Length: 113
Length: 191
Length: 131
Image (cartoon, rainbow over all chains, first blue to last red):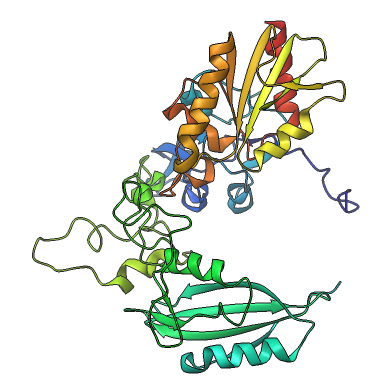
């Protein structure tokens, strides 16, 4: 089978992984499930805005940093499959090969338009 | 070609050579495929040794036997199954299982894959046993333990790394760790 | 004889691959149809050495020696092609795996991927030639 089935999204070349920060809730499921331990993220709690009057204050996690270490990423796609919010996706853009090994740790966030 | 499940037969360890050679000799369409072992720690204190034969049509038969996990030994198939010596030596190196002559004497063999036990670079154990700890993971902080989200999710542990209280940071007089406890996280964790 | 590839068939780039595992197949797939097989020591304006695949402890010394040999022939771009030679890849936790060939030799470019697409290599070779 070389074509995706009718009515499904077109196949994207698996050149890298992209993150939609607007969808990420810092649930950490991708970090937990990654078999290579190559995803790192930090987040902090913020009060949930616009609560109804009289409601007690609640917090939610807001994403700070998110990195994938492409030195150990094995492109298994488990992070993409496991994300409950579809914040991660395959991307066709190549990761430019860096000069320094440390630069294989990159932030996969899609640029905001 | 459709996938056909293998026929599987359990064999008592004492009957290993006789039964395997009977099965192999009875069907000229069979050829030797592979031989290896599985560490059953956590279920039983045994190794399961498996030999597989298959045919050109893809069908196959596996014969399995079990040996105790301490001082494990099994009679060698190398006299009755051509080609079985190499996988037996590999299994011996990676699991620490001794393959013996008919008289029960361990057969000597040069290491194939690992350095000699006293040579630098030897991993200090048998790498395919389930209580063989992946040292690199044990000393690397699990990414899910950092980042400020620990308080909002259930405490979890990565697959394959035993709790430091079981392997690693233990009181001096607590004796060796129980292999079954060390091996317990080797299975994949379900959420 | 160690095999090299005169990539463009004009002596501008000779690439020597040290194929150790799956990534070696992607290097093969990247070789252009106009490439000419040459001796790995053949002269070239630009030399490239690709280490493609998992570097295990038993072969690590020989891989490093082969890389150093290429460097001794002239200005060379050493490329870790794939996650394994870059940092150990998915096998970083294995007792027998070197966590990247840069533990032993200087590496100039790290190509991520498991494996990288052949285009990742051909684009990099173009970049080296045009530098």
